[in-house]
Amino acid sequence: MRALTAPELLDVWERGLAQSPIQRALSLLATACSETPPEALANLSIGQRDARLLTLREWTFGSQLPSLVVCPNCGERWELTVNAADLRVMPEVEPTETLQLSASGYELRFRLPNSFDLAAIAAAPAEIEDASATLLDRCLVEARRDGEEVRSAQLPAEVREAIVGSMAEADPQAEIQLAITCLACGENWQAPFDIESYFWGEISAWARRILGEVHVLASAYGWREADILNLSAWRRQYYLNLIYG
Image 1 (cartoon, one colour):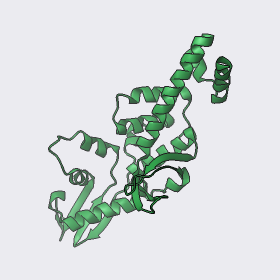
Image 2 (tube, helix red, strand yellow):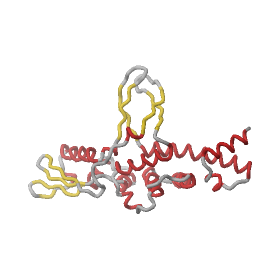
Image 3 (cartoon, one colour):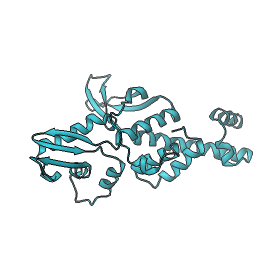
Image 4 (cartoon, one colour):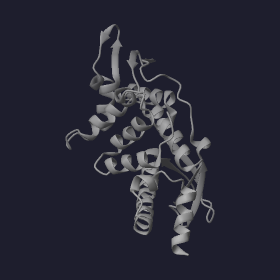
């Protein structure tokens, strides 16, 4: 994997305007991992995919991730900055590895969810309400009790919960929770952190800003977009300062 150039990042952003969040994540990785087949990237577990997105985000915008926090108790708002290293958890298994679990007399084999699974759930009919059941049905390789094969829908609730817990333990990067304490009232809570949506928000803001810079520089100097994008951020800003005086 490598860092993206400004033209590449702008191209990914433009394509992403018509894509789903899952497609955006894979488009970013496909551009940064051009030597890896797209299908292989989609087969990564969600945690492994997000670990790569976090690294790509760090290479693009730096190691500090600022965000606005609003206390659910008192409504106080303040800026919270998290370091990328604090969000990085190494996955424990390879994406193709089949996990095994014994629970309540059942022998289970299953794999970790990947982007194909999430896309299938997102495209499912609206009447399918239990997304977790659909996900489990896709990821369950085999379930047996007393030597007899059992379908996923026949598994008792405690067995299904055991599988979900095992998945979370094996792929911790897939669901990051931030422990937050309000600076004003002391309220404690946990907030989910989604690297895809966070990174995409930053890319969108960057793209709109850089297109504005391209407009100003092209208007002033008659340069092509490609030439402006290939300038370093420092040189673009220097020329902008000359224009604005």
